[in-house]
Image (cartoon, rainbow, N blue to C red; front, top):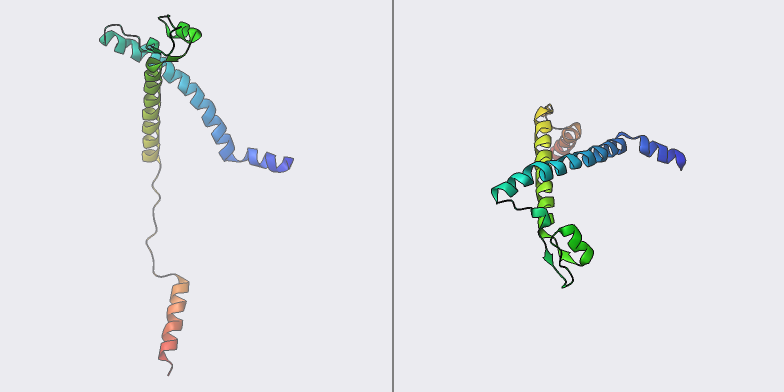
Amino acid sequence: MLNEFKAFIARGNVLDLAVGVIIGAAFGAIVKSLVEDLIMPVVGAITGGVDFSNYFIAMSSNVKATSLAAAREQGAVFAYGNFLTILINFLIIAWIIFMIVKAVNRAMPKKETEAPTGPAEEIVLLTQIRDELRSRP
């Protein structure tokens, strides 16, 4: 069983997946910083200094805080501003992945399909048998 596990891990697909997950986590941190540190402040400046990450609706009368972190400590909150920030993160990541896949597909050489040279040998043989059977009285 240990040898089978080694063979499974050594296959390229598993290693490629592991590398992809690690790079994806690092890429996610970059995009998170891009959204939180660059995009959302610009959006906030355009909308008059609005900080979306602290937008929430208190779900309990115990919540009196004005920041999301403090409000979460006091009780249940509906953090729609945080959701908007994460949604923007997702859309940026999805767009970048789409552009990468599109570029890779364009860069990959297209497989040339061979023009059919005629029917397969089996078809030719079956056709000959059929014709031979038809010609018998």
